[in-house]
Amino acid sequence: MHNPFSLQGKTILITGASSGIGQSIAIECSKMGATIIITGRNEKKLQETLALLDQNKPHTLFVTNLTDDNEVDQLVQNLPPINGFVNSAGVLKKLPFKFAKRSHFNEIMDTNFLAPALLLQKIYKKGLLLNDSSVVFISSIASHVASIGNVSYMASKAAINSLARGVALELSPKNIRVNCIEPALILTDLSKNALAEDELAAYEKRFPLGRFGKPEEVAYAAIYLLSDASSWTTGTVITIDGGITLK
Image (cartoon, rainbow, N blue to C red; front, side):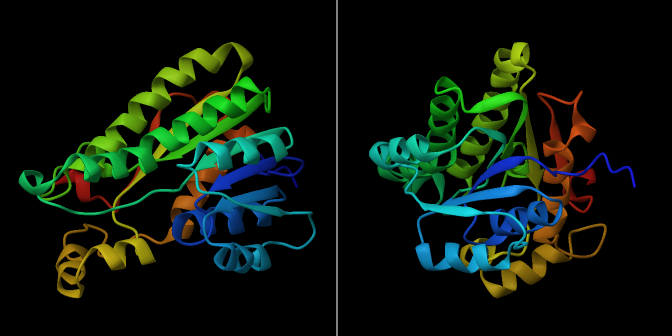
């Protein structure tokens, strides 16, 4: 059966794959036939993700702190050529603007923007991104939807969106595509830890479709962008938000 969304024969690197959206993308991509390389800081959680992948391919993991240049260099040194690269690693820490210090902004921007930008640069310069490959950044509707205490996170995701557009243009001669997915709040450990229970309950009522998104719903969009089905799609942002930005 013809399936333009197949990832058979593709090798895909996924950061932040130890939990949440990154883990779900790894699992769903493996079901579509890809060979998966996962990375994150927590080896135990990465092993748990690895065990959930389709076992018909030689998937691998690398324990890496993406904000450590030496560890990133070691990761890149050990990577094979790849057809897809998903940047899902990120951090969310709310703090009112008037209390935010340089260290707070540095932590958020370093993890959410600089780390994926520099990792992509190193992979590209080493020639590991094959022609016709696809890069996917997990952004957020926070890039253009304001909320109290979220300025640093908003800025980091807006920066990712702009980065993706610029890099998409620069990498287009090699037919390497670069796109973003911006979800609204997805129920993951990250969001549960960032918001109190009553805040989550109040937030859920705001969605026109009546519920939070699921990690796998973001993963399905990533599969589209990683597959040949999106071979003429680059420099764009796919919004997955249950309709909340319609209001």
